[in-house]
Every structure is written in C-alpha cells, then in structure tokens.
Length: 113
Length: 139
Image 1 (tube, rainbow over the protein chains, first blue to last red):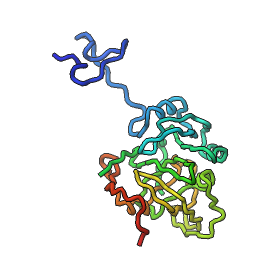
Image 2: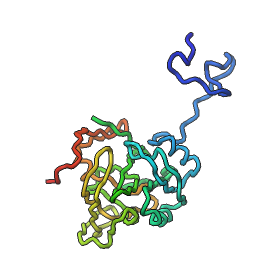
Image 3: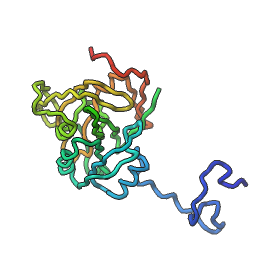
Image 4: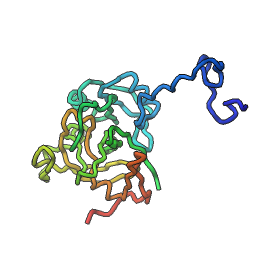
C-alpha cells in the first residue's frame, strides 16, 4: 500500500488523525461539513467569515482576484444590519471597499424579485 | 472559454461585481437574475462610489413584484463583473429590501452583452472570453 503522501494527497498535519493512521478498531468519523460550502471564498475571506459570523462587513481591499474576491484586506466596519453598514460605507468613499455578508440566507425566507 | 463559479444559495446564484470611479472601486455582491432587464445597484453604494443618483435626470419606470416606480438611471464609468469590464454602463439606482442579503441584481443587460452562459447544474457562468473590453452598444 502506498503512503498517502506519495499519491499526491496532502500529508496530515501533526496531531491530526487520518484513516491511514487509525487502528483497525477505530471507526472513521464523517468528514466535517464545510461551513462555507457553496461559497466562493478566498483564504482571506474565510478568515473574516470566521471572525465576523452573520454580519455585514466592510473590507478595505489591498488586492482582489479575477473573481473580484478579496485576497488581501482588512475589516474596517461591521454591523448586523445592512442598513447600518451602508451608512458606514459613506465614510470610505476614498477607499477600495468590498461589502460582504458572512451569514446565510435564512431557511424561512423565500427570495423572489 | 472562461468559467466563473458562483456562490449558490438555495437556487440563487451570487457573483461579485465592482463599480469604479477614477482610481477607486467598490466591490459588491449581486444576484444573477435572468428575470431582470437591467442591473440594479442600491443608491447608498452608488453614492459611496462617487455617483449621485438624486441628480440624475434620466429615470426609468421599474416594474417589480412590489409595484411600479420611477428610479434614477446612473451611468457608471466602469463596471466589472465575470471577467468583463463595461465602460459607461447604465444601472438602475434602487434599494432592495433589507432582508435580501445581496447588494443588487446583475441583469440581462450585462449577461447578454457579453454572451454569458449560465450552467445551473454546476453553478457556473461561462464567458466566451472574447477579450473585447468595449462592447458595442445594445441595438
């Protein structure tokens, strides 16, 4: 049997177990669900989404990728409502700013325009 | 052919766009909406980007599910989305409901101009990638 690292798979980080390192009596737990599944997020945005869950944030952008997603930036304002964050947006007219909502669409609301 | 992945939420496709004026840009999230004739951006974002929706003489009657109203038409110096840049792009200034969770709407005016193809199964939008940066005006 080939070692996982030789088949192109990423090596496990120290302290993390993988199927390859578990004993035969240990059951493999289900892989953790990606909390950001379905979203197009950069590493920078993932970090911001973790730090500011379910909020509207303004990010001062230093760099975006071809998808116009922030790859380097810092949060300059955050709020739980879009109305509040739009008011703050006027304070950053002279900056490159991205607006993000880090929460999910609620199950209870249907959106039709 | 270039392919762009959308954020998919309960059958809704979201993509990023940028409004530019001079050296400054504002990056927003738009709902891809083939049921919308025009691209819609809230007045607050247009103002933050350096435009004045209230000063626009050009207005467009807008029919939506909530009724009919006349909204300002704002010509944006540059509008970027899905790898394409549209210069002097006319958008409607209209605020979406505050529980919409998106900033605005990417309408058919932009989607058709660049011949985008929406792959509903994979949540992607394909661009022919013509590299044409200044499209012809709509006929």
